[in-house]
Length: 131
Image (cartoon, rainbow, N blue to C red):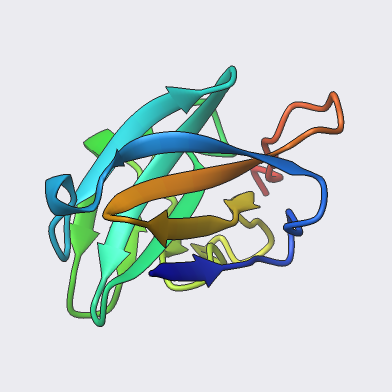
């Protein structure tokens, strides 16, 4: 069985599907960080087995987001560096609102989570203004 989640940042046509981890190794409300094909990737499992993948570094000063505070009730991750906040349902910046996390497509096949890494030769990382 395959369950796939596409995103606005990285479509599913020109991606290489990188094996991330077994589905059972990521529990609901849990965050984990991986390096896949040179990209730092943050994985989160939301309710209803909704698995999302985002850039693993904060757009502000490249602080590891996996070390931040995650509020499962409102889906907001707070960066441990300077408290930038992100909604992990869609990667949108909450505070400040003028930034967004780069989103990677995900899929689950035969109990394994895969992340789609765009094959465009670019760094998959959004930066945000500090104003």
